[in-house]
Image (cartoon, rainbow, N blue to C red; front, side, top):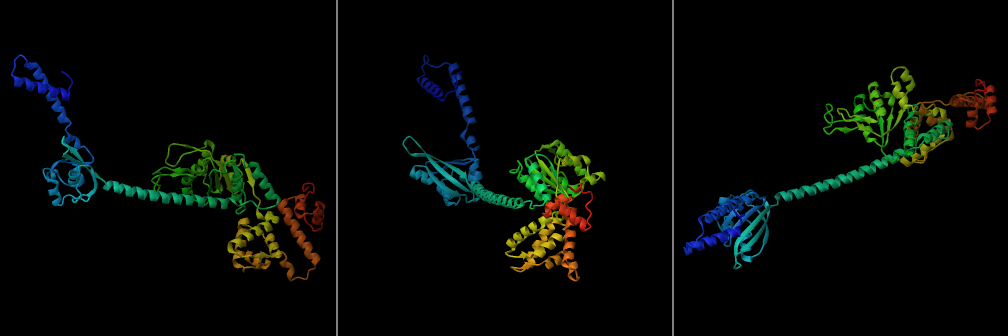
Length: 516
């Protein structure tokens, strides 16, 4: 059998009709040919049924409406019913003008298409369900140019309008988020600049040694253990190392191990997966180690970390990877670790309160910051620096008299630089605009009696006062610097003068060779 072809089938039918009408046996078609032809036409009709435009129409997303040239409704698809809310039997067979009179249509385009004989577009709203739609009507012409059919497409735009509104709202939210994110980044950068503006101030031998070590180790990507009493400026030293390191453009994350409860510190350091424990975020959380990747992590007050957590920290340092709580996949890390403590870790190791292996891992390059009481010549420098800072902050022009500075140098400063900073701020706050702060004010605020007070109500000559002051000064310097050579350098006198005065004033300096 020949392939199905609409034109060949029509030719076959024409020939069959001609032969039947002629009734000529010589030219009559054979039964076999008639049977084959009819079978072919039957198959063609079957396929046409399969591809019935009604069936195709019911699979369209847009509504389809067809009317004849007089406006009589011939067909609507399922999408038309969904969009307009009108059932097929409510409109099929009816004239569009009658449907309009019934109030079922608004802005119908079919009458205009018939009238204008061209495409007509309109915006419509279903009177049944309020759905908004874009209506497009197109004419189909016969051979004489008359409109024989009108095909109308109804495209629902209610969802589109809602989507557009949602997109616009999302865009507004994104702009707000971007604005907030930009502001947040600016704030972080501002705070970071303020934080990293701190510099290790001082001209004492102890500070010079610390500064030398900072510049010696900053660019070498190794672990540093910063040790010193509370308030000596361990974080400032960490900042200096970071700012002079090869990672200064990468993150610098600081964790105070003493400020976070032990039960939460592990989650803060290593992060956790969703549902890892009761109260865990549904999306999980990235830990401080991951946040510091490619950068630097400061573990402040590391001596306060529990033994169990020390073990996990050691594993992270050794393997350079971290596994979140509740997770199975280790995350590779590239983090430089700075550790700081006010504890004697070596003593803690002896007492079994700090892991020895972790101690040696951290103690690759130790930096010891001397307490302020051993940095006598830095006290005035720091006091003046903080005075300038807080005068600017509070809009004042206060000054400290020389005796006041002397009182500051005599005080032992158990809270170190942090205590000095707080005292200066308090003095500026309680003082008048252009006040000169006296030694007595400072002594009262510190609850401290300076050494010169013992001479006020006694009949002691100037020579005795000077000798007493010299003795206390040399004793204090020897305690701070340990050798007559260093004391001479600090007091800006000859070493021999220090030795002579010490002997004269009854100050023990031990073996003179040891103090050279």
